[in-house]
Picture 1: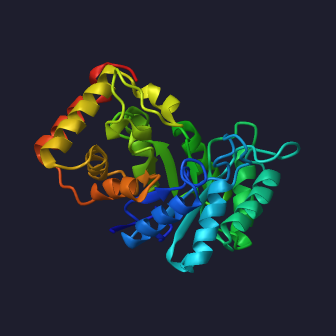
Picture 2 (picture 1 turned 120 degrees about the vertical axis):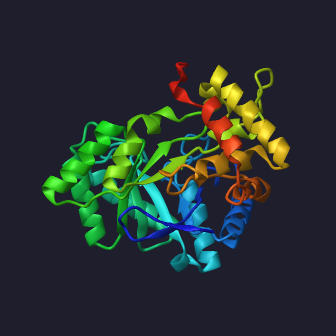
Length: 323
């Protein structure tokens, strides 16, 4: 699998990252291990998760994904070949410092993540989303301490808008604090505006690696949803935001191209995403080896100029229709 530089860090990551939201949630440990094995066999080395996965599920406390990844890393003995990323921000315990990007929460949360992941250092530690109640300087100082202690290698953010991104870059520069190297953002064929409208230029200017999540729009771009049929899925409620005229036209275009080329719809959606020059490494997810295979196929699929033009046109957010 092709490698890309993780921003200015010098770390090389696979062209497709593997997300861990499903581990311990929609995929049990056995299925998760199989997906992780298949990803590495295909040449992957970048695994992304978050400490809150999957705290929202009944009977879960959070940390389920990190725990499974940690067991897998230990059982396979391949820690040195992998780039491990996780996130901090959400509530992981009640009471003082139970959530947020303050120093108290970040210090304890990092220790917990290290323990669950069974690693000494987190390669990429990310703010899961902004914390308006905590000064950016405090957050960066906490990162600075974790880096100095050898517990974190480099840092990034997720779900930050342009204003928040500029703030964190500006404070790092003026205060001499650690600089982020990446941003995770919601981006796919049916959700383009959020990144393309302003974030893309900011990332290019500051050499920030773009790591898009939900590249298949929570399954919407796989063709399993139709205007008259709802798919049975734990994550189905999160798909409704894509139910627009543009969204359905885009799905139909993806389906037609996939049929013409004899590949899965997921392969077409990933292949399109990999043609976007601003994308460093889309983060894909899979509940099974079969699902992963369809996604990985996208990295080898070459779309024609006509195919790309069709997908660009039908999904273009500048046509006037709102998401």
